[in-house]
Length: 225
Image (cartoon, rainbow, N blue to C red; front, top):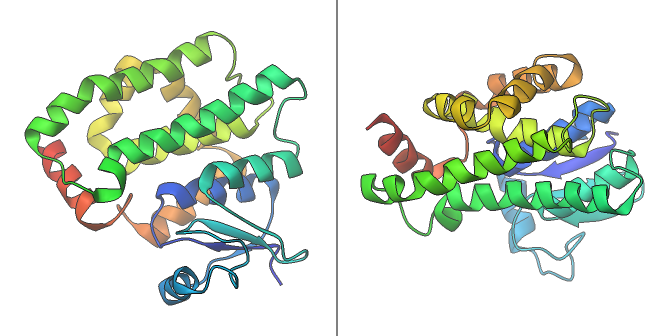
């Protein structure tokens, strides 16, 4: 029996953060197929391992305990595997980084594909994306993203910007221009050890997919334009 079961669609996006953390700590994980995920979503909330709307959801197969929502899962694993600072303020800043990453994903997919990207809406959004990158760069400059020890903040940072700019390579020059320290940190973290192996496994499984669906198609159209 694997240590965990992760319910998430066969794309990187939010599930990639959970996969990366589990790979870093050496935990084994099963990922049921899309049919099982759909069945879980349609289940009576009283019967779900934890009441939730949509994946990701992670189940500890030994205890049976479950957590949904990407930031909550990351924080749960961070606590369990000692990937968080001891002091309160740095711990709060790590949680902020995780929540910021979730916000970036929401914005990049226009709140889960409620609208599609157009050339105008993308041009209007670019200054905000640049600002997100500079927020991460300022965080690194202030010493909150050291190379070592490798903890939750660094794993989330590398997963967000590394996966996004690899799957959407048109964004890599933007990241290198606006957040050069973060770009280098991301490359270092994803090119060594368990996280390198996890990134390679995701390339094999998911190809060039990032978030999937029509929203990804519209995003790729404006990036090519």
